[in-house]
Image 1: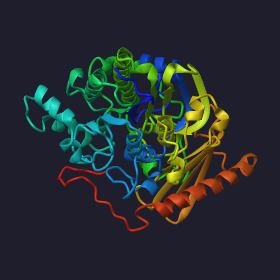
Image 2: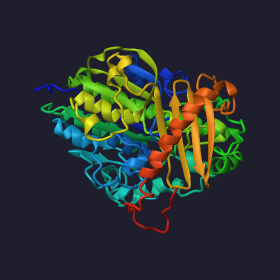
Image 3: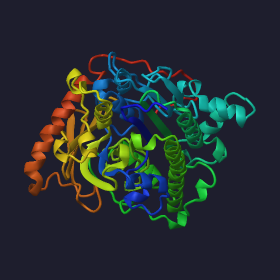
Image 4: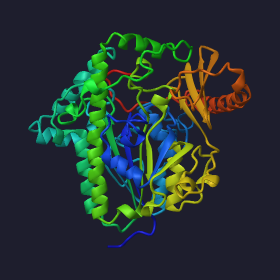
Length: 494
C-alpha cells in the first residue's frame, strides 16, 4: 500500500445540529459516545459559528471560502457566481482525490463541484427541488430494495409531512415510514464505510461525509425514536421568555405565536426525537472511524466534524434556523489532527466553519490561497497545531443571512461580545449580547453604557461587513440565477 505524503482530510457534517447537543458539550440527553471519543482524541471548540444559518449558503461558504453575498450562493438552490473557485478545485491541483457521500446541497445538483466521485442524497423528496430526487442514488437504492422498484414511492412517503403547514407540529416531528436499514443516515454510513474499505491510498483523499439529519422531520425510526423518554426532557430555560425587539419580531415572532399553541408534551417529544436522530448519526460515525482505523487511515488523517448550522430546539419557543441567535448560528465543532496531537483540548477561541476552506488548503500544502483571491476564510491550522498566537482572525467572526435585500441580517462576534444587525424597510436595528452570560441571547446590552466603547467598534465592523456583502450580493448587480428546480403543483418554497 502506498501511503500519501499529505494528510487525508475526512470532513464529516450533519445538518441543523445544535452546538450543545453532544455528550461532550454536557448534554445529558444526547447519546454520542463516538463523537465524544473523537473529541477526547482531538480538539473541541466551544465557540464555533457558521457563515450563514441556512443550509445551502453555509455549505457554499465553506467550499468557496467566501461569504454568501460574495460567492452568489445566498439562498438554497441558487448557484455560485461565475468563476468562483472551489475548495475541491484547489485540492485537485494538490493531488487530492475528492469524494463525497450524502448531502452536498450545492446548486445545481448535477454539477461535479470538483468531486471525482459523488454519491449524492440532498433530500429524500422533491417538495422544494426536483434535482434532489433526480440526482439521488439513495432513492434508487431504497426504491429497489424496499419498494420493489416502484419509482417515486419513497419520495411520496418522505414528502407527506413536509407538505403540512409549519404550524402543524407534524411538519417538524414527522413519523416513521421506513425501518433503520433504509434510513438516509444508515445509507450514508454504508456507502462511506464501503468506500473507505476499498480506498487504495495511492493519492491523498478528501472525503466529505454528510448526513441529512438531525434536520427535520426529526423522527427517524426505532430504536432511535424511543431512545430518549420525552418525560425526561426539560424544556430550555428560554422557552417562555418573550423578546420584544425589531430583530426578533416579524417572521420569528409570527412563527413563535403559532408554535405557542402546542402542548408542552409535543415539545418534549420533538426534543426526544431530535436526540434519537443524533444518536443514529453517532452510530454511523463510529462505523466510519472503525473503517478508517482498520484501513490504517485514522492516524494519517485530519478529521473534522461539524454542522452547517444549528436549530433553536425550543429556545424562545422556536424550532428551525435562519437567525443570529446562538441556537441557530452556532455549531458543534471537533477536529482531530493526524497522529492525535493535543488530544482532549477544549478551545474557547471564536472560530467559523468558513475557515475550513483555508484550514484544509493549508493542510494540503496550498500556500497560495491567501494571495490568489481575497477569500474571507482564515485558517485554523495554527490552533490545531497549538499555536494560538498565529491564528489570524483575532478571536472574531461574522455571519450573514439575506435571501433578499429587504431583510438583511448580519452578525459579528469579537471576544465575549456579539452584535446583531438587521436592515429592513430602510431602517437599521441592533442587539448586543455578552456571551459570558449563563443564558445566551437574553440580556440585550446594546444600550448599556458599560459596553458603549466596545460596541461602537463592533458596530463599525458589522456595518462595514454588511455594506460589503450587500454591495457584492448578486441581486444588487442584477444577477438573477435560475434555480435548478422544476415547477410542480405541490412544490413549495420556504
